[in-house]
Amino acid sequence: MTVTNTLVRSRPHRTRRDAKSKALRGISWAYISLIILVTIFPFYWMLRTALSNNFALNTNPASPLPVGFTLGPFERVLGFATRAQAIAEGGSGASVNLLQSVFNSIVYAGLATGIVVFFSTLAAYAFARLKWRGRTIMFGVVLSALMVPALLTFLPNFLFVKDLGLLNSYAGLILPMALFSAFDIFFLRQFMLGLNNEIEEAALLDGAGPLMVLFRVTIPLTSGPLTTLFILGFISIWNDYFWPLLVTSDTSVAPLTLALAVFQQASPESAPDWAGLMAATLVAALPMLLLFMVFGRRIVNSIGFTGVK
Image 1 (cartoon, helix red, strand yellow):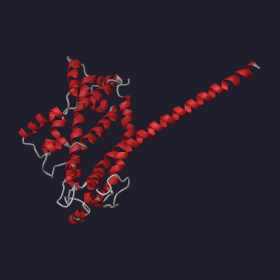
Image 2 (spheres, helix red, strand yellow):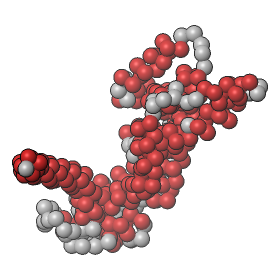
Image 3 (spheres, one colour):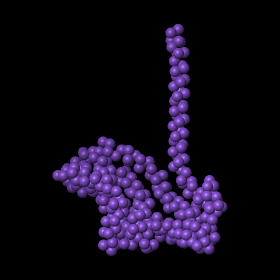
Image 4 (cartoon, one colour):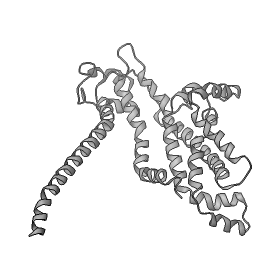
């Protein structure tokens, strides 16, 4: 009898707990849905604008659907539309060499990222695995670079590149950012600190030197974080605009982010080609989006396990 009364008495409590749990779950899903909507909406608005006629956009700028639906903006970006067709749809008539610009961006982002990751690996290995006097103090100096705003480095870097005569060249684009990254050094050092010492000690006993240990043992064990840094760095440099704007005026070396600026030029007959600009932005962002979708899990896992012994 006592057991029965206890069970009957506990059911309302379980019911209230279940109701509270369902309410909290509903609130959580509503919050997540709101965050997803806020995140995705700008991409939808870009697509909506890119599928609109640039003249018609001014007639109904708040429409949630494409205004005067057309694929003309994408045709202008890909070079399939003539100047007359572009002007007829509200474009400026300006053209962009998309293949050359994409190639320039690949060279710029690929070389800059590869070089900075390589030198950051050497520095991180020295801070994490080698014993030398003043290592902690020097690492503190490296970390202090994280507190320096990137904007403050643009002017001295520009003067440095100008004095070397490297304006309008790949070297001028790549050199200032290819030799040092405080974040990359910190990221790799934290991961290397968690590596097993026994493997390196065995290699040293077999007669391997520090460089051989680095390239034959440490780097293979650090392939995950290295891949993560390369992808994140590649995406960041691919989207870079201000530095290429400072050192490049020649279209033969200008990256894609600068080439897209032609769609902001206004012609006598029309306003800036916002539809073309949004189409060009989507085309430029698509490779990075696919790259992150393919390697997104690896990036999250590498960041999550960095520094865990």
